Length: 239
Image (cartoon, rainbow, N blue to C red):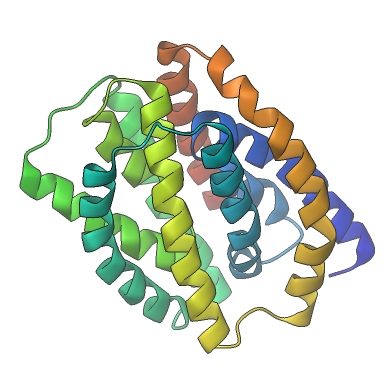
């Protein structure tokens, strides 16, 4: 990755992951949507583990006391198995097939959220299926926000509780991703260099962007997230 690309990637991530720390998801979707013009999707997904961990860590540290541990642990118990399966599948797809699958998954999630806004009602079996599928999606695509958010929207009413449970969920699964990438020597020198240079900028930006979450009302919280996911998936199909 050239110096110019690293600068561009950092600037894009400043915007997209500021959005994620406010709304709880879609940072990676938007980052891939923009940067896949210049860098292949798999490289971007590997890189995304850094800003996702920063978002979750800073968001949870600066907004403590808004997670439901019982619900979170139940979700992670099923998602862990899915994450391992997703990581295994990650290494079997070419960049073109990977991008197509990623676009399809994001678009399906976006259509569902746009078509079914508001609080949903789900039986326990469906919740467990979504938890497992979210793990597969996180391991394979580096993205599980649409699935996790759909599940949490059906569980909680408060947007801060929804966001913080999502961030805690993402933090654990992204640490699993780091372990998988480490075992398979996946993080190349170029990706590591991009992480190294962009990390300080993202840390400062996300630290201050977190407070904007409290300025967003419940209705806009749901609508904005749904439409960004849908548009992000459609745009990847048009590459």
